[in-house]
Amino acid sequence: MFAKLYRRLTEPFRRSIRNKLILTMVVLSVLPIIAVTALAAENNRRSMENEVIDTNLSNMKWTGIYLGEQFAGLNNLIYTLLISPDLSDYMAQSEEASLSSRFAAQRNMIDTMTSVYYSGNNNVVGLQLYLTERNKLFTINAMQSDLETPAQVPSLYADLFAQQKNFMIQTKSGDREKFLLIRSFNRFENREVLGGISLEVRWTMLDQTLSLLNPSGEDTVLIAKPDGSILYQPYGEAPPASIMEAVNRSGNDQGRIRMQHEYVFYTTIDPVGLKLIKIIPTSFINRSAQATMYYGVIVGAISVMVALLIAVALAWRTSRPIVALAKSLQGLSVIKETEAPHSGRIDEIGLLETRLNSMSQRIREHIKTEYSMSLEKKTAELKALQAQINPHFLQNTLQLIGSMLFAKNPADSYEIVKSLSDMFRYVIREPEDLATVRSEVDHLNNYMLIQKQRFSTRLRYNIEVGERTSTARIPKLTLQPIVENAFFHGLEAKPGDWQLDVAIVRDGENVRISVRDNGIGMDAGRLAELRKGLDAEIGQVWTHGNRIGLHNVASRIRMQFGQAYGVTVDSEPGKGTLVTFIIPAATGGELEA
Picture 1: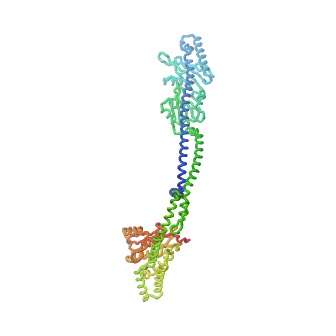
Picture 2 (picture 1 turned 135 degrees about the vertical axis):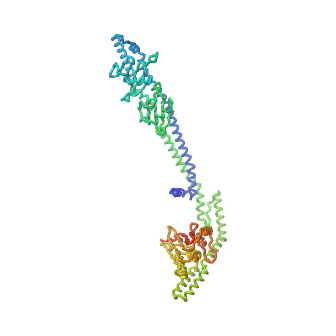
Picture 3 (picture 1 turned 90 degrees about the horizontal axis):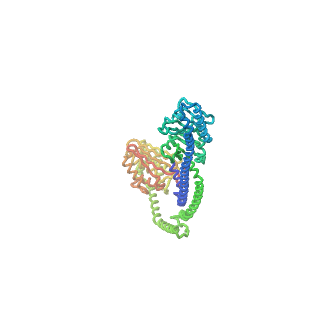
């Protein structure tokens, strides 16, 4: 199927030099433009990609610095409380101090924490202070200002103390819009843990800074812990685990990672050690370059169209004299006295026209002396061939007629005489190159009638003529010589009964004729030698000996119809021989319906 489609597509270019030249010119002119346009579009995309990468790396760096300053501001609130004299006074109070003195210290501590709480603007929504020695928990927020003695160390500070960390950031349980900044404070002399402070802060305090990383509104921006767990994600969808794993594996403070469908940028937020991550889909970069690519494609398409028109015009103009010369040669006959018209050109085409006319004149002169003589000789050979009758067969037939005159009734003898007369009339009348299958079958029936009379019940034969085959044209004296060879080479040496079958059937646009006998057959070596001879005897129209040979029939069929036609032979020792040949169903301008 693909081979047939390929032949159909390439047929116009194989038949016309003009089409080949047009295709070549189009390819040579269009392909460079397409290549340049594609390279320009790709270079533009790469430039846009590099610009996006450099811009985002710079933005990530400065945004990380801004976020670090905001987290530093929260730490400053905590340090303000830690260096407060009220915290030192409260922790210095002993159990023996008077009740009024302890109450005043607590009151001062709550006032200081309240002041720190309100200094955090609206972003700080809660402040806690836990003292381990006294097991006291101060809580300041919009709803309460309280001091309590918990039954055990609060879980926030228990985790911090257990992990021996100085600070910890985590989201508030049940509320993803806030986070807790928890910091421990220790005794200076021996690093003994004295307690912990926690700030409850809204994540929205970072939104204005994070919005600098998402101007298009399509990117993913998030803050994650060092272990990869996401703390806050104001923009985009949750990234797949593979991206977070790739960031963790990088081990760098800042950088980028090229994933299959995304660009991942990351940086570390000092001083809290969190990861700031931005994810940009690759489609964003492609869309960013689309506008430039669009105009590049338009310019490239216009250039291609212009180049195509110029290429076609140049190819048409260049090939016009060649096509004109080819058309003039179609009317040039080497037999008739005709000449191709001269274009009057003085270039290579004009020289070619002059040489071709001179060559055609010399060919015509050669034909008059050589071809005509060869044709007359060939016609004489065919006429002599048609007039040839096997003398052995004629002698046997005359002896048969003589014996029948004494042993048979006159009607039987007359039938044999009539068949022999019809055979003579068929071969000696004005010869033609081709005869109809019907005429050849009639001639074969006359021959088989004589042979049937000679061999009586020992011979059985069958001639089958299919529909739409009788008017097909075939070289004269083809069927009867093949059948005669079957008798001479196959049947006469075989004891017992003889069987001979002739089948003429339609095979598509051809007619297939087969002659089968049950004679002695031939071995593989002799069969191979015969087949080789049939292929080699191209153009031989004469025969050897006193009968028309199989080589002669094969040569005449090929001479008449071409090398695609001929004779094939199949044979097995002791089983007989099958001779098959194919001729066109339509010859001489007629096709039997």
